[in-house]
Length: 368
Image 1 (cartoon, rainbow, N blue to C red):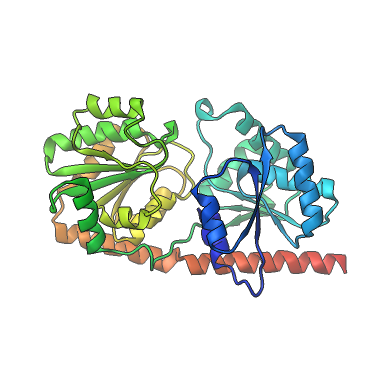
Image 2 (image 1 turned 30 degrees about the vertical axis):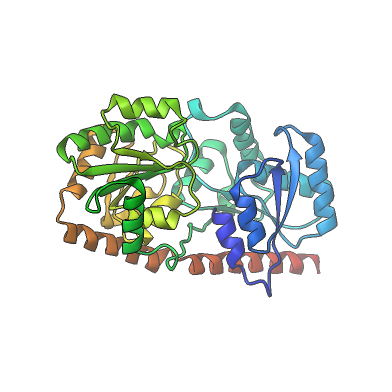
């Protein structure tokens, strides 16, 4: 999502982006890129050890002759580096690391191998972009990523699209069939162990006992009624009829703006959660676990607790639910102002443009 936001806002008089996807599989993001006039190519890589796909990537780079090659996430970073070497392109490569490290128990061996390989290759890219300080520090300490290549560029948010909306509040409540005055607490994120849906639902069960007017909105990949494991968790905590599973949504500016409180219960893997920045931009105060840079992003406009501490999460949510609605709204507006002041999309895009220009000019001067 951040890659799309970046490329859709780049100055096209100076930059001509082309996206090369390693996989043959696509989702709604492909349509987003193409709808923004961005050329996309699919390599059709079947496994991360697909040497033929790597050769196809090197040939593609030879044909395109890019000024800069930007890897995006672990597989993309390593593939971009190896393919550029094979293509003998002599072009600078940048990496982009999007989160903190996930618990080993939840990391596929192929991903763990790729992260390890990244540490061994990390002196090759011109810059390693991280979206959080926590992410950069973890990778440098645990896997030896080269700290001299570090650049911190946070996620940016479209504060015109993501903004407070009384219409969004009314429309989502009507769609869910809940009272217009119902208080909505949301957790947005794909269904994955690191997102800790189980922890959130346990805390929701505690909160629900004290506040019968509260409803809970969950959205993301595999967060739907066909997920039997998730449905069992809802039932186990007595939350039937009060938890609304929305699945994957392409109208997150509506969902986020409809919430009264947003939460992130993640135990690992987060660098700078998009969903928290989007909720804050909509004037929604947040409760987050202190993972990655989440706590520092929220600052004093919300609450942060330790990961997997169900009691603390429930208490933090309870504190915001029990607030006078006017005070909670003021807290949310402070959260929005924090995003406007420090994490606006345009300012982040300009920082990427400056970095790309600097790297290009330095490489060009070295070849002259």
